[in-house]
Image (cartoon, rainbow, N blue to C red; front, side, top):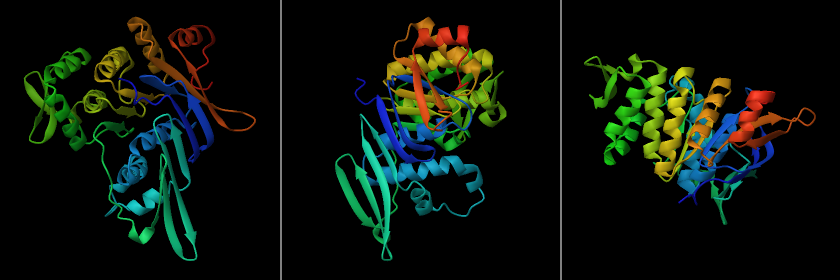
Length: 320
């Protein structure tokens, strides 16, 4: 059932990673570390690796990781420059137990070629003949720190409906906030019923929207992957345990592998409490840091007992 899970990864020439290796990933993986240590870039590399199943999907992943970083700025652009987005990932190499994906640009004698490798298949394409058609895989989800759009939430909610799990989502939301009675899509807008009145998610704060985004994405990512950047974004620390419990339980039920990032001590502590309460052995905390002498990025993993010890005795987390 877990054959599709990433267990190890090797990243070269991608953003802050010159030559990075890590292993030991499980069903639920929390990535911590100081700001700008490379947590988001790590998840982007994982996202590209599992997405690169053919040329269109590979191109889609390379474009999406740029778009997710820049979507706020792109609101003011007339059109997205897909070619520019893709070419910014020149020289990327990502290999895992699931896939090998690499992208290089050869510009020689006025002829520009894209060289793409997916597992043992390599293809060279003249840039003028590249279609720039982007693929989409519905079971691989990435929630960036801007959150999901209404259209993305609506698309994910269809997975909830197909599984007849509307009542489960409502129960989760009610536990998160007892004033929330029900969630629905009304007039093509995600809305929650509170005190007998339907309100759009935009009126309810980032926490509710983030929870809806995560839960609906989990259902859509059945037998796939969910990547959550800054997973505690807008979520009050007092409800983090409920959120983590939902992620642990649903990811197991749906056979979905989860990667999430944080730099919050409260989020790490909550993750560890739920780990121990559920006696979950398929979850790990990974700390990213930089070698002071070489500036190389490294990662170490801690199981629930190791993390609990460091949180209560040494306090060495978030790369500190």
